[in-house]
Image 1 (cartoon, rainbow, N blue to C red):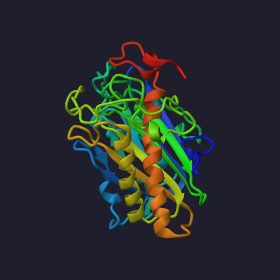
Image 2 (image 1 turned 120 degrees about the vertical axis):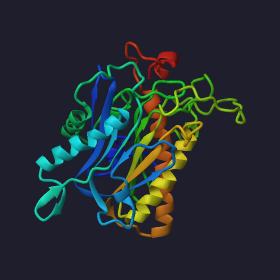
Image 3 (image 1 turned 30 degrees about the horizontal axis):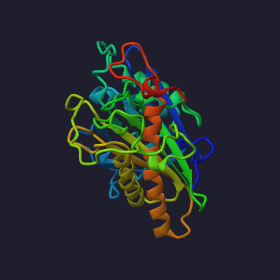
Amino acid sequence: MHPGPRNLITDVAGLKVGSAEDADLRSGVSLLVADAPFTAAVHVMGGAPGTRETDLLAPDRLVHQVDALVLSGGSAFGLDAASGVADGLRALARGFDVGGQRVPIVPGAILFDLLNGGNKAWVTNPYGALGRAALAAAAPDFTIGSAGAGYGAMTGRWKGGLGSASLVLESGITVGALVAVNAIGSVSVGSGPHFWAAPWEMDAEFGGLGPAPQYTPHAEPVATKPRGAATTIAIVATDAALTQAEATRMATAAHDGMARAIVPSHTPMDGDLVFAAATGARSLADPLPDQLRIGHAAATCLARAIARAVYLARPCPGDPQPCWQSRFGAP
């Protein structure tokens, strides 16, 4: 396996990512979209999720494909971002056809960033407009670090952010991840620079420091953020032809990557969630072994994307947390 040419989720052909953020609000939105609907699924392991339209992603539901997946800041207010995306898609004549009416299918998930120092005294919910702006910005190339849904994110120690990574398997199948990191846990070992995800790093993509020389694995974690003020939300994607049940399995496997990169993860105070997307461009040559490799690649990409999000986050005046870069040096 090796990273794709961009080392972004958009190395999965046909996918685009759009982000929009508001510096005064200190929050933002990111979305995954394609030129045609794609198979989608979801798996939730955190204790405090915030979601829209995730029930329809179960394998026994009527609609198996979606038009976009949305990640947003703003806690429950951020769910309105998906409405903005749906409005924009409807204007483009996109959506599930019901008797001539187009209804865009846009599941979404949110993270809590209301205590990050931004101006939250809005009169009109700003997330619908941010969602529509993110749709307009959708492209194969996009910024990670302090951007989109990760713009105002925080973690247990460092400023959070938006991350992405990709892998191309020996079969030619591509897998990628997109994540907004806002965890109650830490992505680094203690107060040092080493990332928990270091064993899965490729091409020095988050500093090339390697694993921490020593740590105390049995140390009890301490929650350093207010209760309910966390959540890491992600999308893993592939060009493989997966059913919705198989995509659910990919999302489930990807949670291993979250646990490798964030300690602790999947806590009662996090809403940790992973969407899966499959474009169906490549058939599986040997279904069960291929699915095993796709799940492993999804976990690996997500671990790397989480570290990259924090590694590339940039400082902003008034930040309540330091950036990794501010403490340990720019790339």
